[in-house]
Length: 97
Image (cartoon, rainbow, N blue to C red):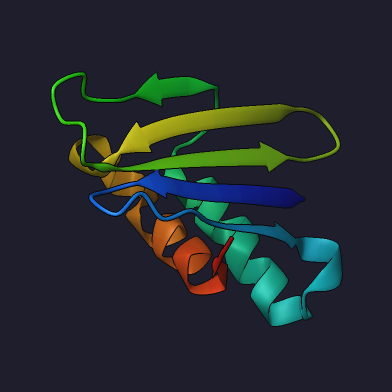
């Protein structure tokens, strides 16, 4: 499984991203990521963005496995509650640029 993460926007407009592949992680961390993806409730492509708030951080998470790929977009006001832990994991791996 591969998970790509991009954070953009916010007041400063900084860009952070990462690509995390379970094949390149240790077993424990790979299992943790797989569980976070399962528990996130992100199972189909969707976009949850507020039209009124321009200075919000925006997030894009793409999840790819052998069967399919999905892309979910949301902003600070519309983070799915079930996806917050996955978002935190990805933010720890993200780097500027």
